[in-house]
Image (cartoon, rainbow, N blue to C red; front, top):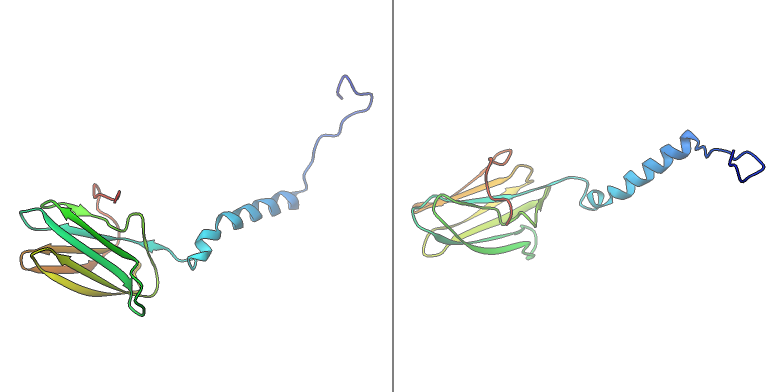
Length: 145
């Protein structure tokens, strides 16, 4: 009872269904972004310079069935360093993507990436470009750009 009131104040009570319904509604709204992406997930492309000099590399990624280019990025990569050009622009699972890598004054190659779930690792040396998918991200790799 509140000392200023003459009648007892009822404590607020919530029915279990009301609380559970509210929690479910919040979870549904907060998960909407995932649903819009198809409810699947996203992954990355990592590029490694296996030469002994800094090399300028261009990566383009886009759905194979259209002219849309999702990623078109260029960067100078120091020797034995890695670059994640997809850190802020993930590749969504499902579909098929064309991945092109061009090393300035060096090799270039194109890869068809079907239903990407695991990250794509691209490495280049003086003799060419290689592509491999495998789960996980090695510790210490640059994921900021």
